[in-house]
Image (tube, rainbow, N blue to C red; front, side, top):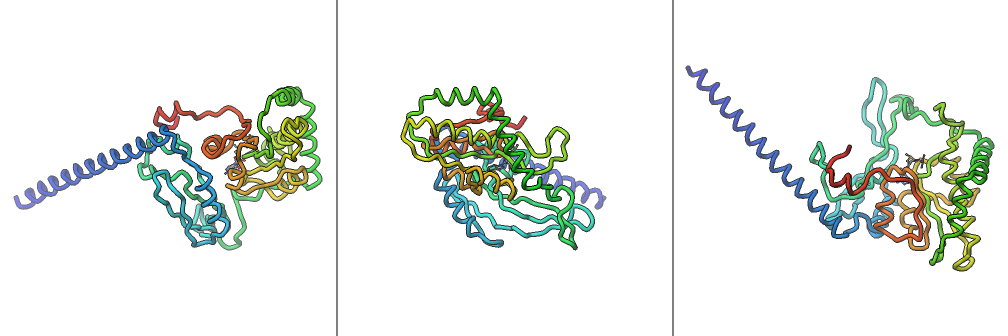
Length: 326
Ligand SMILES: C[S@@+](CC[C@H](N)C(=O)[O-])C[C@H]1O[C@@H](n2cnc3c(N)ncnc32)[C@H](O)[C@@H]1O
């Protein structure tokens, strides 16, 4: 009898625990939904997700930050989020004798869609549009040599990579698409002075791809860089606004040293993330194709460049209203 009574009491306690957990979860979800609505309202009220000041403040901190330092990011609601720099920090696994090491800081630009999608894990709803993440690599615990997915990509030989880039530029320049592009750009009335071209996420081209669809280098990435040179050439000759030199910049964290050298030889200066964004102003032409980050949203928040050239964008405000990633 005593045992039955205590079991009933335990069941009652379990049930009321379950109920209060469900209640707490509901409250939490309601709060999170409220945050999502607040973010949407700010967005529709025209409050920028990204500003040059917040990007500049983060950039200046990152230039000096060492492992163990903390950097802050200004959030949408005026609060600040803090992130520790963990470059060099190691974790066990995945697998026997393997460790994961954080190798590089990465700014995780949050698009409006990312900020406002209902999350499976509610913890992720916040007002921070530029949280700091780290890129990780895996390596042998003892020898510290990178392995598996982190094996270094084999670069082309220098002369081969230079020749590859030259060939891609020539093929692009003699293509029908390039002729049409030149004609359109040449005919365009450009009322403002163009001082620079800023290209984002054009990719690495000077390594030996293992994929059969690719040539030894990556022609898609090389051709996007060739396009930068075409834009410089056409606009440089137009001189609607005088004869100042047009400076070319490219930002992509994936560039190898070989990519950088070849691009610099062609007059394209390499900028580390987020310095490219700080160069964008009304005298800039911005190029970006298939970036992994929301370049268009960042650029439109921080400046009104003279021209933007990009490919079709999959995510738009309609999907934001759907509330979830498809
Ligand atoms: C899907 S690939 C596209 C590459 C190339 N544009 C193409 O069309 O094949 C996405 C590119 O975005 C680059 N990326 C990622 N984060 C970036 C950042 N913060 N700034 C500039 N590029 C970035 C990646 O390194 C990668 O090269």
